[in-house]
Image (cartoon, rainbow, N blue to C red):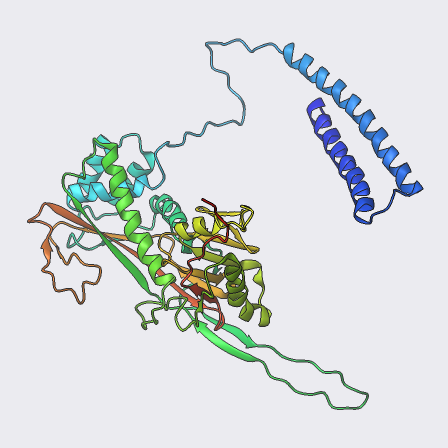
Length: 445
């Protein structure tokens, strides 16, 4: 043990003794009585231990400072020093997600020709080893030209990982801890419990039955298209790369969250149901902070009554609503919910995460342990300059005319993610609607 470790050990022991001494006195005060003889003895013992420890701590800190002052700097040498068994690891300082974004931009510029992508990467991103290694591997696979140019580029390599790492923190789905299961695997779940009874000697035991269900998560996918202009996709400007990346992230994250937190029904082999599908909402009972507390209790009540494990419960709301609730004050000006803000926090003992993709005026309750999730490790990317795109969020029913990418000097980038989710049991989510709470603080003019 060195001096620094001894100091930390002593500080921990002194903090423990001080806490025990304070609790001793606080207990007597709470019980409205004087210290007993035994408690006085303990108090004095704690005091003596703290005094002696403080003197020892001062000596150790003095010696530590003296040793540090006497330390001699290691002189610089021109010759390299070799340390057996050591190695130097060089990491790229490029932002997360940049490899994915750069590859997409290179594909657009090269019109799908991987050989040309390889040359462009060597010129414009010569220091990005991850990107260049991936491009070289794709070319050496024996296909230097992507078939049909608008076809999918499906290379589940490491270059996707940093994009996923950047994408998921921006989604509600990515910040939850759900039950991960593979695609196309049937899971048997128990929806009803068994019961037990006391049985007398020589009496028959009652027979009870449990209720089970079977869950199978098939392949479903979400796709988002981002349209970029030729002027934006320039390699010499880092700002352009950031804009492209932001556009791709926004397209992918918003689509996931709007479905996940929505009320839409499942469409077989197309999309999963929103977690609020078929859920009876709890309308806000009023606008005061006490109404909010009552509403929170009401939305939690069915889960508590069903004996759910509430340790995985989480509220989701917009940053604006979280800020408004965290700012609620009583008549004396004190905050009702001081641990809640725009970045999330805690509301009535339940963790809160915030997202602009959460519908306005809603507080969504999710029981994370009651939701199954299946997902692919990496998205697929399709790129086209020749396609005609219906520029609408609902292209199937849109009346607007398609826009030609070639004619308008634009490129379309489509991200496809295989993902599916389903409730473990019928009840996995709840929601408070019409949330518009205000302070009951009295103001004077």
